[in-house]
Amino acid sequence: FLLGGKITLQQDPARMFDANHPLRQAQEYLRDSRGWMATADLAFEEAASPGLRDRVRAVVSRDPAVERLLSEEQIMEWVRGEVVSTLARDLVRRDFETTAFSERFRSGSLDRDIVYLRTTNTRELAALRSEVETLCPANECFIGGPMIAFADYSQAFLRTLFSSLALSLFLVSGLLVWLGWGLPWKVLGAAILSSIWGPAFVLLVIVLSGIEVNSVTCIVAAMADGLAGDNAIQFILGRRKSALLRGVDRMGGASVMTSLMSFGCGCFLLFSYFEPTRDLGWLLLVAVAAILAGDLFLLRGLLEPRHEDGV
Image (cartoon, rainbow, N blue to C red; front, side):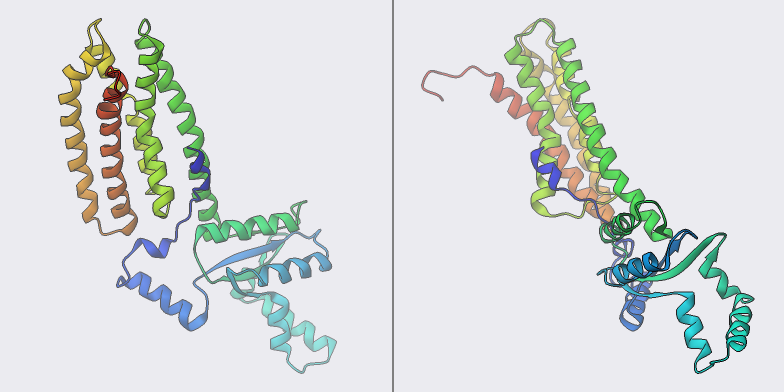
């Protein structure tokens, strides 16, 4: 669980498909030929001073996730060319404002620049958004668009996951204590430890393997959290006022059968067309095996009496 802080949720919509998928090939062609894959909007309020706008544009244009920026001023300078007359320049601007393309740079009181993005990776886009927020603490500017919104939505998964994970494991531990009230604390501690073993092992596998944690693969943590303590509850209820090991002996076979059924269901995900779903399938198999090992072998090892020679 201490290593869980090293998990960073990131996902790239293009990587959901195989390399030979037409959508992914089109995006890679766009990136290779134009240098960018998607766009976002850098919006300025009327209160934003010209100096602030220049600083923000300079910082955003140097960001690794950004290929280039396009503002209305740049278009005007290109269209005007060598036109020197003030009247002619005003006529060019007024003519441009009548086009549909000019609406791309204006939204109510907001002035917008087009930001051409080199990547759709949510981790990099979230960092870009945080950078803009730092430059405009009074909300004089912000960066938005579908990909930025998707990055914000994706980052919320990780915060929700860990907050709910800690609360759920606390509630499961409390339920085990309530159901097993009267058992020695050492026995209850063993039941709680074996129950949280599964989710902890899954987090360890994710950290050490470097698997990309996204809105699909993070489901495995919620699943492991939901199954935590299920077998321990059956063992406590199945002991019939005897030792907890008696409940393990009586209900252990049923735990194995339900785990095999879950294992079989997880195998179907390995044949998914989408890469994140296949990763989820592997993680589900690991989670089911870890939960079963914790509830049977780890719990039994903690409960069985040891001989004096340590065997």
